[in-house]
Length: 423
Image (tube, rainbow, N blue to C red; front, top):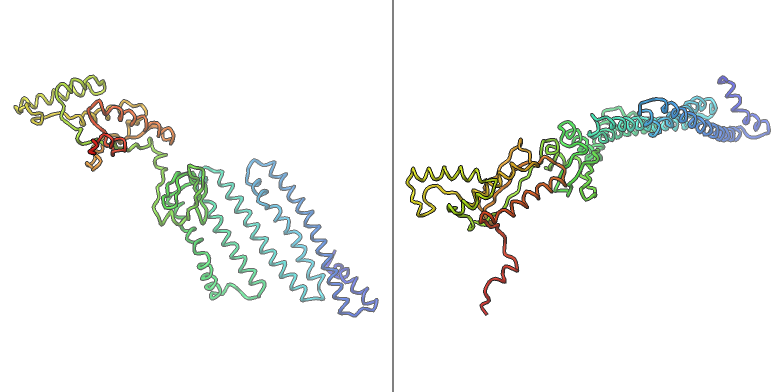
């Protein structure tokens, strides 16, 4: 059907009304209204039919392919948006023909069609972005990357361009001029300040590999202690170990300090670092009788025998007066206990011997002398790690009395009952 034929059919009602004696202006008006109703009904029916056909055809096609990309296109409404373009193209073609005698109506309808095309283009672009994000998230290479941030930034840019084009379409003023772009940039910077900061932060987080999805982080400022489940343009979502969720501004990952446990998770062991506080007044030199008694402890018997020979040899050579234990070389109960703790760690199968391990003194405090255990467990799972750590300190705390040592504790109410009552 050519253009002349369509124009002829579109004016049938107008000619009929004129022949019936209606004024030309009213005949044109009624004809325009009726044509608008007919076009709207036709376009809506066509849109419904095409939408169903295109969507079902796309689903059938996607079911036959092995890739999931087209499946995600279906769930993101890509075929539905594409189906809308066909009725829109028909409307573009029909409007100047049907409404030839009404330039104002033609111009308004074409503007509306152009605005709809801009919005539809943005929606199609959004569906492609969402599909790409979901498809890339399946890949091991991109699974821990903040894809949501990039999608959000591109959507903001797309909507920004769309809004500029809609304004140009409605007003007729070009938005390409430098003055307009400068003003628009200033407005965008003001409105989207936090978004821009979040975008910059998400790029730095990704490029510098600061945080990945699945990382365990501790961010005391925001009360976060758990696994990162989502990184987007504005926030980072953390699922805490109590199953609550904490949202952290993305920019805070760059501006503030937090702890990322990924290094521990990727390493060969998880660190155990804890001190036992020994009461200073319980530390003493060991007599020969006490050393003989400690030789019954199997882990340190070889050490005590070897060490005692060295001590006796030195004391003989230096002619030390052993009437007092302080003279010459001597072993102390704390030193022997420190060696016992070291030997116990070396015998523990849960401790990784290939990583750094030591038992050391820390500076004396008003709560005693800290004896710090520093080692790494093979098992890094939180529950198992805590069991291993508890077993080590259960044993060492129970072993302390065998060395005539005491653990420092602040007095409790029960301890105060031992003081004599002066009344």
